[in-house]
Image (tube, rainbow, N blue to C red; front, side, top):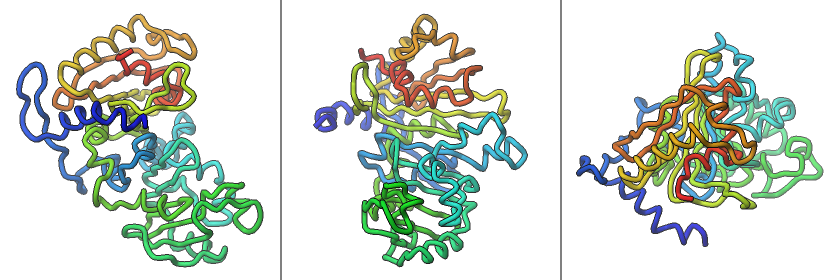
Amino acid sequence: MQRVRLAAAAAAVLAALATAGCSGGDGGGDVPRAAPVGTHSAPLVRQLDQVRSTEASRAWTTYGDLAAQRALGGGRTPAQLQMMSGYGWATTQERGAEARAQLGLDGGTADQVVEVGESHGSGRFAGGIDTSAVVSKARGLGARKDGSAGPLTLWRLAGDDRTHSAGPLAELSRGTADFNVLAAADGTLVRAASRAGAELLSADGRGRTLARDPGFRAVADCLGTPLAATLTDTHVATGAAAPQPVDFVTGAGVVGTDPARLTQLACRTASSQDEAREVAAAVREALEHGRTRLSGMRWRDLLSGTEVTVTGGGHVVRLTGTSEKSPQLVLEMLRSGDLSDLLDTSG
């Protein structure tokens, strides 16, 4: 019901971001449609083109460029990025030893990873995965071929959403349905609780994907080539028991080529150039004088060298800065709700 109630407000944002044309004046105007997705696109955009745009994926999608992270350490993930390296595959990483032993799946060797949902979501591993070895292990556990999920062959270990307290999947799944279905082909693997979960991450650029969703594409383009990122259209409001949808898209990411000097980056959409300028001004004020809701810390003690600009044809607010507190500060603060508080200036 909440999403239905917000549909009209969200439509204004999407219309502003999706309509072709040039800027029509100081107060608003249109921005070009999202560029086609291809081999020239940034890794984040290419992976988002594999994710169907659904309520679940729009609510919370995390991404990690593990290949880029390893490159910063000469082939091994730098010590400073160990916590960051779990973004995009947290559910599988939690079962790392079991996944390696029972499925031959070492998610940390993937090039890029994507996970939908804050916990127990479907996960995608692109590149760097020995899928033939994983399928062989899965067949040893009783997996059977069950059609396809997009361009990937689907292998079923159990019925959709069935949980496991005993049997060969009990140790791996720990009472969940997280590994019921695998979909694989050519170095790419999707892990899910159901066929629908596997299809969610096997869009192959067809239909409505997050990369073709105007708001999410605008934020992805703003983030550029992050080492890790989270994108969402929800916000944990003060006193709320759970995240609620809002009428804009927020993204947080970390970029850089030196693990000791990374840039914290946050982006959010706006319905017009006027709104974007107003949001940017409010964010600058909060960064200078405001405090976080949860810890009561001053923003200027958390982020230094901050710059707030309006980009994306005038419809995206972009915040950059550095942090000595954590290499993934903006990612942590998006999950806690503090970053959403900063960027949601409507209250």
